[in-house]
Image 1 (cartoon, rainbow, N blue to C red):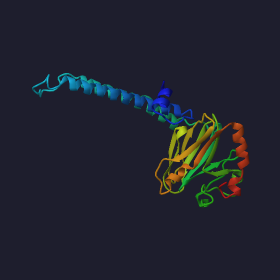
Image 2: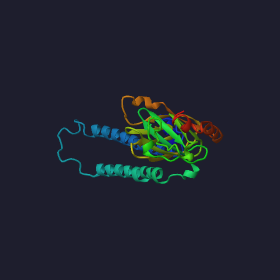
Image 3: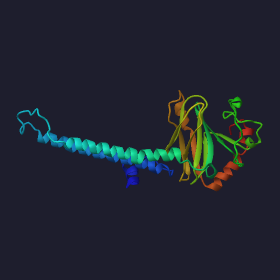
Image 4: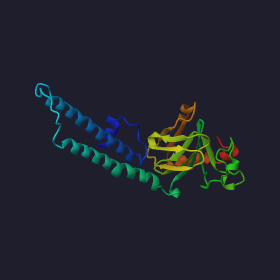
Length: 258
């Protein structure tokens, strides 16, 4: 019922992540409450117009309502909103923030926003990221990777291109080179601000093979609209391994971009 309501009534975008199911459910519950309130107030409005029409009440009554029905209704609305907040919204947020998947069982990437692109870094086939230092940051080395560290020789850096295997958690450490951006993938129901000087983790588990747009959800300058050029490709583990192998060493051989 929840999925049908989201797709056919609300027209929500495609869902392609496991963690997004709870997000969609919360949105549907909120709309159900809004629908109930809308119908309820329309009925009450009609009743009030009929009940207090001039022909039935030729003389105004200034004493007002004597019962507490309206107070009980208002209390019921407050309780419903509290249930949504405490019983649904907070647990969804807590799971997203506190119950991170194990890095050993996940695809780990670094995401660096800049005007007006997304830089992506992978550890490469060895699974070990090269060391980073702020003194190495340059236009051709946005992550500040230490060129002398052998662990970074097979690291992969791409521009506006993310590849991940399906049904495997993805942990993205998000940051920014210049201004505040916001890393958003609608189909994954994930959104995380990219803030200069901070490396903030977020995660999602893709469940559908496909190609999905990466957006910037924060106004970041005159070319903000150009930051819709990033794409997330979800593929089989075999195809991902093949892609990873084909890109190994691009960080060292191309100055950080493919």
